[in-house]
Length: 590
View (cartoon, rainbow, N blue to C red):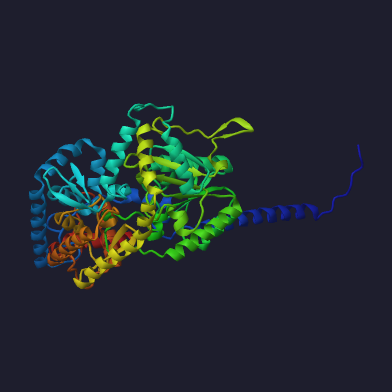
């Protein structure tokens, strides 16, 4: 045995202190990283996915009865009676104009889940049943011509929905694309596996348009986004993606970490757009594979998709600053380059409305991958990824069993590829270049014209636009802004199910067409004003509306089955028992 050496009595204490100090440094570093991530999240509920999902489950369903639905903003009895009469007239007008269309829609809805969802989320849920019973949605159309759509009752309406963005150039253009596509590939038919030779031209044009190396075909924009994210993770070896608060990237739950997703998306960071805090997170974390950008968010950064079902108050906002957003994307590109993060532009929705080169050319920032869909298919369903060669490969040459699997039976359907070719052939032509180059100024002028008409008629409305994509905002606090969609419908304007949350115009609108739409907008808005829907008490504020709805929710949670009566409404004044119960419930909760 070796000799025993004396141990200094301070050594154990030094070891303990060193261990404690190391642990403290480690914990401090973890805390710093966590705080940095927290600062990069948007302060709203939408910026905190887990919290928003928990809160969504706590919101109770309740509804206003016929005696309270028209006075939920505190209106007096005379105004309530005036609104009720106006609602009845409007319902009768719409029903009388399209009885066959309404009957067909009612017959279909019980068996089509998509219709049930869109029908339920056209207005705030407190008014849902009343509206569904009196002014049900229609969902049947038989013909399109120019910028109009005809329903089974032979009523023509101006299309402001744009088929969710598909209709960039007009339905007649896409009808032609489809007809010529069918003729072109008729001899091959729906053969899958082998490619029709038209694919070669498509690949060449897509590479030229995107400035990227390789192409992958899919059947929807959602599938394209799924594959782009999977490839980014595969090649970086990292786990997380970054997306920005409010941005929509398709229905895949991997990019829907908040309300609507049924899985716990632990691999998504939802951060603030146009924020230095976000850039700090990207510049320091080692687990980020990619950043997803939807250029549409330039119109309303950090705000979710606009939908009339969310028009609880008048606090919808929008505004486009091209220079500021381009500067943000440039800084984002620099950080992604520095950290080896894949930058993905999701142009499925915006597509070619910003020009042939899309957001890359419009904002002068290059992406590593770009996803397309909608318009690109020439009227047929499609999804496409364009990307850098090293990111598009689905296998690793040094590891033959390490692959990124992605297939799709219909991912290169001959009819889709041929219709896509028809669109692309026109898109690279001089005629399209000239038209799309002038489009921004045309649609900016049209938005300005409509806003001038709103000011002239003293209606509390403002439109904001990103080229031919528009959002309507409301300039006066109120609870009934969602009613405007029905006045517009009565005037022969066809909207998407999100109502006034988004208008998508096709570029074949002439000045005469738009003048007609402007006139119908003004007719709808002035009638809505005359019917008293914007005549709220002067003390009403957006913050006050939100507090009122919060109190109603608390009361409905504490007293299930009791129909709340909005405090201050005519019915509430007549029934102090319900109002006092709501107030005491709110007080006890707070």
